[in-house]
Image 1 (tube, helix red, strand yellow):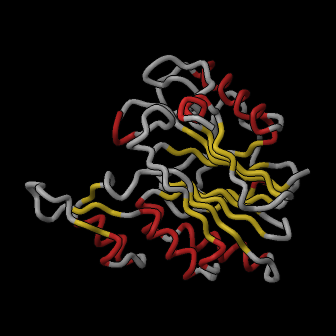
Image 2 (cartoon, helix red, strand yellow):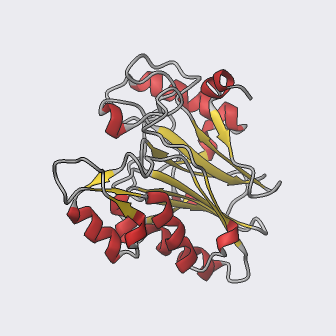
Image 3 (cartoon, helix red, strand yellow):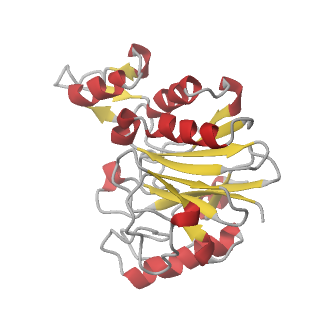
Amino acid sequence: MSVTDLARAPLVRVERFGPRIRAAMSTRAGGVSPPPFASLNLGYATDDDPANVAENERRLAAAFGIAPESIRWVRQVHGDAIAFAEALPPTVGTGATIEADAVISETPGLAAAIKIADCAPVLVAAEDASAVAAIHAGWRGTAAGIVGQTIATLRARHPQAFWRAWIGPCIGPDAFEVGPEVVDALVAAGAQASDFHAPGDHADPTRRYADLKAILARQLTRAGLDVRAIAVDAACTFRDPARFFSHRRDARTGRMAALVMIEP
């Protein structure tokens, strides 16, 4: 696929889970929203017209190959709460109100979904297709242990399953600049010195760049996943404005989605 084709593709397909699992992340292409939300904005919390977001939600569902009512969303608050898709209502055209930052689905045809615009999407699936999860992991959720808690919940419910994970496009290690309070919070959650580096000629020597994907991958292994079962997409949302929304880059911008489902 050419660079132009990539920029126009509404979905990044995730192939690592096998034929019984369907997974993808949306890009900013293929929607109806005007700038600065152009064009597949899925964020009802933005000041885009909700009718545009609803149409974009329908287009996302069509590209993924399911009805919009089969996608389960939560209202993300950068915490560590986990919701089950089976207990969530459809929210087509309105946006979710139930607060959580991870969604687990154990029902074929019912997609677990989260929204991102620099935070990391982490998708998890059992090799036997017994359960899947979509996790929203910004630095606060990472510090709160949302990934480890989700894996622990999955393993408790499906103790015989072998788990695979995908860490999707998010803000990269040469763009995610943080202060010492964020470094301290991430170190307390298991980050290592190698996950940070100095910005170089920055006037504030306490600032660091953080490698969120590396920290999340380490949390997944600490939660029991085989390192060979973890895939990391190298794309950076901040550095690729043609394909991705980025809150840190643009402030007023749209939201993408990552979703995963057991095949019906």
